[in-house]
Length: 572
Image (cartoon, rainbow, N blue to C red; front, side, top):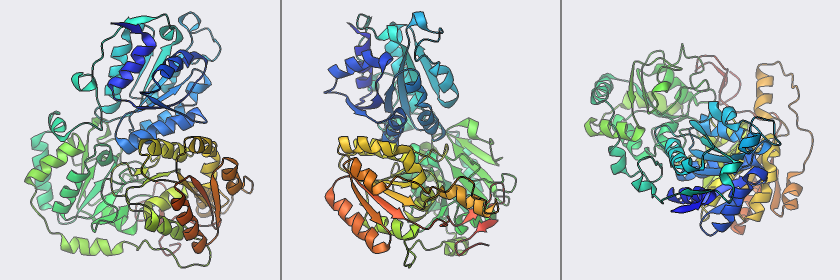
């Protein structure tokens, strides 16, 4: 049947069961927003304060649900404002379809008002980009974009429509094709386990080789990476780890892929990894890494990383194999499928002696008894009061490391954090996306005073849509992680990191119509969080910390993983 081209775009979103779009309108995308007005009963639009906030919200929506997120923006600065969010999704393999509109065909390439080659700009930070000049290609492009975003190793895709394509007079032939009936469509959330088993199977011989390696190992270590979370392979991974009876270390992006309070968990690994995790990496004789990138924050010195071990890498993306760390064996395939094949033949092992050596090194994550407020006190209060099914979105820096260290994430999508790109300003947008997707659950936004300055304008979005997000600001009056490096490595030369300036975050929250609380000690923290949760509304807790609080432990970049600059108890 013949329908408007813009209607076809909306219908293609409905094909993919998209119910929420985040965005910000502008001149070139007005025709699409005019069509969206006609679909407002079917597709909910969240208007953020800034395009970057919309990009992070779509990303947070995707991570917390397993669905593909969708974000709209106009041409020129609207499109370029998305690029930080696109790169954030790209580095963390989050499936988001970004839709922009550009100038008309006749003005393309002529430096027209708000013209930019966004497909060219976004090409290195997406799985694919599409410039749509022919309206008849809309259904195929839309279906392909969602398939590319969700299938294999997920990631962002950008579609840029020329304005001519969206004129109200443009009609195309269109037939509604539900995604389940369209082989070009792909979705993460709705891949049933039966559908997962229909995917091309990993090589059985590769699986059998690993089984033999496991049988020979005396000191195995299992690493839970982001691929476990993205592949929703938490059940298979837990069965595998428990059958292995091996310590389990968790990367930043692996948070929620394995229970953070499980008896086998050794905690985070890498630059701020626990003594248990880093020691296990150095002393194990077999390291099995599932769905991780061996980034420079994990394998700080690839030449010495897990030097006593045979390293096995399981990943869906062949390009990751031997990219950063040379492996002794690898298996290409989805984490869920590979682990299921391993579990079918894996016997129950007992590594009591190895566990007895490693697991006692875990530091207890308890609040420090102190007259002044500490990060541990803040996070212990959150841990005690936070509902078990709550989501936690963080920004980037000390507060991020503290949150990952002291909060125990239990399921995929519970932790929303920028692990690869390290994006300050990610947290509040991601929290908006998660809260929009899960209106009946609580969402905590954990941030620092430096990061909060980069996204606090999104409090307007929080207030307008009545989102009960609780923002907790670790306010130490500095760019804490940078200051920590300056203290330890740069001789205490604190160049341009002290934030001795406004705003007053309590007054700022109140200016947006949101409750604000200033917290200076443990009692005030407990009382403020209790009130915030009981209100069922948004709140901002401004938690005042000492300027020289540090994340412990810490290993310097490029150093062996057990060469701690800082230990749990103090400087080494």
